[in-house]
Image (cartoon, rainbow, N blue to C red; front, side, top):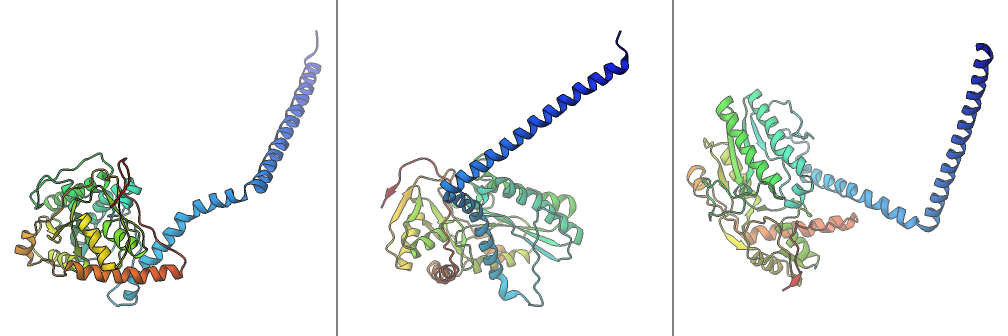
Length: 368
């Protein structure tokens, strides 16, 4: 028999040798890995410096664009900075907000299809959780809340023009649903809080609006056409251009929102211009006002793009004494002047905005 002492010493010696061997193998593997990475990096440096720089630029470009957007937003309100009745708070409405207020204009949400479809979950959160937070704030401080709803609650309408009693025709699972249904449920939340908690609510269903200080690369038809015409690029029309829209100038909308907030009307109210134009007519009008030689380019139709849009504003006229007063061409000339100045500013800062494309169906490109 072998005693336990020598046996243990033998096993220990064997284990030590194994451990040394394993450590040696691990060290060799580590050296090989480092050498391989070094060789690969050297190969990249020698043969693909431009590729690496391209990847870095690809990652940084969106951040650079966001910084430019933030700078532009700050410039939009810089003339109010320092005013005794103005305070700017940077806050995400998806998070609760604790302030003392008398009135809340809840306008938060991306509104152009390229923007709200870029991050549909965030769009939904803004319109649902954000609306709940604003309603919670209104309840806590006894404030009145005005929700900026949208004509998109009518979807691709089967009733024309659209009045406030129409329930809409919306695709709940399409690419626009995050915005359309987000606004629809936001309206539902408002009236649930009104009935259950006694919160005073006002709901404005806003139709297409334009004017100075809108984003250059907003992605909607007005900014796209003006930007393209000023830069001598083709004006992109999605589909045949027979779709209709109604465009109101921003000052008319602001007057309507203030009138609604200070009224006793708690049911939804359309705020828009009942002057209806086809998209093709609108493109031709902007070409004429800009004095552009740009061609009109027809692209595949965007999915779930409404074919008709025209507000019935009889309710606003009767109950608010409101209707648009700025003629379309006058408003467009003001917007075009602003865009020209903004392009000069952006060019001096080496940043040229590009219109954002719509989400399209497959099809051929054709020219007018």
